[in-house]
Image (cartoon, rainbow, N blue to C red; front, side):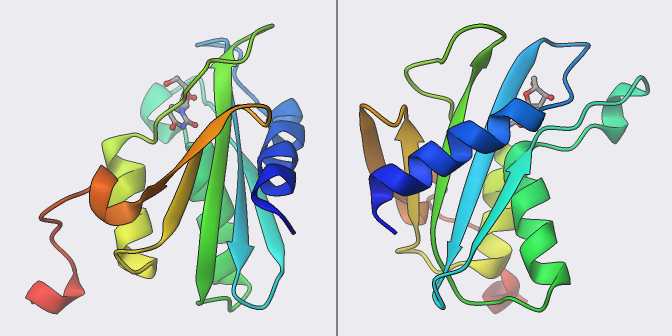
Length: 133
Ligand code: THU
C-alpha cells in the first residue's frame, strides 16, 4: 500500500463519520507492519465528552484485535462538504499514538492529492511515555 493509497483509505473512512454536532468529518487509516489497514472515523455523542476521534477509533480497533506494530497513520478531515488542506490530530490522539508507536512513526496529513509526512516526534516532542515510568 502506497502513502497515497493510505490517504485515499482515510478519505473513504471519513464517509462513516458520525458528526451531527460539529459537522466536522474525519477519517483515519492505520497501516500495520504486517500490511493490514485499520480505519476509523470520528464518532460524536450528544453528551459531547463521549465523542471519540477518528485516529483513536482506528488505533483502538487495531489494538483490540491484537495488533501492535504500526507503520503509518493517514488522517483526512474537514467541515462537511469540504476537505481541509490539513487536519492535525488533537493532543489526546497524539498521546494515544505515542503509547503504541515509536518516535519515527509516520503521520500523513493533508489530502490524497497533496499531503505531508510527519514523524510522531515532530508532532509530539518531549513526550511522556511508559519509558518515563
Ligand atoms: N476530530 C477528529 O476526529 N480528529 C482530529 O484530529 C481532530 C478532531 C473530531 C472530533 C470531533 O468529532 C470533531 O472532529 C470536531 O472536533
